Amino acid sequence: MWDEVLGHQQNKEFLQKLLKPGSRPHALLFYGMGGIGKKMLALHFAKTFLCKSAAKKPCGICESCRLMDIENNSFAHPDFYLLTAEEAGKDIKIEQVKEMAKQAAFAPVLSEHKVCIIDDAGQMTAEAANSLLKLLEEPPPGWLFILITQQAERLLPTVLSRVVRLRFDAPDNSAVQQILEAKGIVQNTRVLAALAGGSPGRALSYNQADIFAIRREALDLLKKLPLQNPFGYIAALGWGEKYDRAAALLLTEQFIYLLRDVLLLQSGAGGQVYNTDIMAGLDGIAADWPLHTARQGVNAAQEAWQNINKNVSAKNVLEALVLKLDLLRKE
Image (tube, rainbow, N blue to C red; front, side):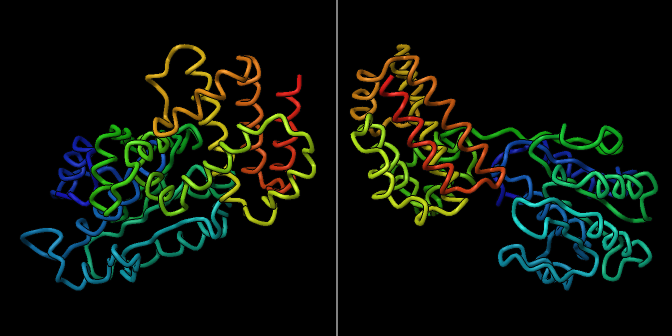
């Protein structure tokens, strides 16, 4: 069941037991790294849980199933509620939780139960989390909550005490390669899987973003350091205009991964390198860069990523990173 989601067999077996009548928890927590199928499994479980068929579930033909159109991301089911942040990277607000809580006054319409999925539940404001806690302390009859987060510790201890936790582990890289190949991606699947750290969702987003072109820009800069005219080089790059926040995060990630690989080569651990397809370029940097410079370069790239993630101007952060890396090579 739920073959659309790779792996997580133990969690699937637990969820299958919840389909049978009897005592059920009123709240579940799916936690683990991003892009490994937590939300997708939650959606498929919700569709199955709400299905009206007395035989095979999900039947795919009843009104309940038709209203849970996962493939097209269309959820018009009156007994299903998906709570997410209003904008990517933003917090879930108390007003959103209160709006969800209003639904507690209404009985299920099509199914015997209601399912509420709260995506990225760790991104709730303190007020929103406390408002949710009230619902979990006195759950509406027939409601099932599924909270999803990458880090369980981001949730209030009082919330954690009222949910049944299901940990989701990342599949191995070979499994991620199979997913990529099933999607028609055949080139550099091993490198994509490695860069994505075992996250199929991240590997797919990397491919869509043309991560290898972004990596090439990062590698070219590292090869050219130190620069004779860093400010002129920065102006010629045009990164400030080319890269928005999301792309800038990808670019700084590539600096981190490339310099990490350089450190591995310098430490004699070449077998653990991510970017196996560009070993010649990495070997050249490893031979030219002092070990301490590569370490400081990783730290600078990580700091840049964190600043962009905090909504600091991507243009300013990228320009500062180039200058920092240039200064490190000149020391």
